[in-house]
Length: 161
Image (cartoon, rainbow, N blue to C red):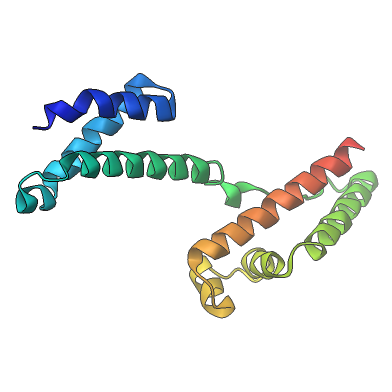
């Protein structure tokens, strides 16, 4: 019964993601999940095609989300500017950079600014920030990422001028 859906499902997913090899992995994962689910045995295979397509689409969506979030997995490694030496010109440049960074932070949207300050300057964890702000941990992460990206972009633009 499963074989009759494989070819069409594989073509559908390959068109969606643009890679036949990755599509094959997705389809195999979809089949494994459907076989492991109790739904197939309960309904005797009725609606199997729809279940396979839905499962495969959900796998593609999950992979896309994971790939998007991996871009920012190491956002904690983004550093604030610091002076490189004790030389006067480096200290002056460091002060100017810090002033610019503080201006950028001040210009952030209020919720992003709050999450960023609590994380970077107060040292609170994502869970603590979420509780304090009354939002989800996921939203805290998004606010911090947005703030970090905005600050990095603003500092890069300043450096390019």
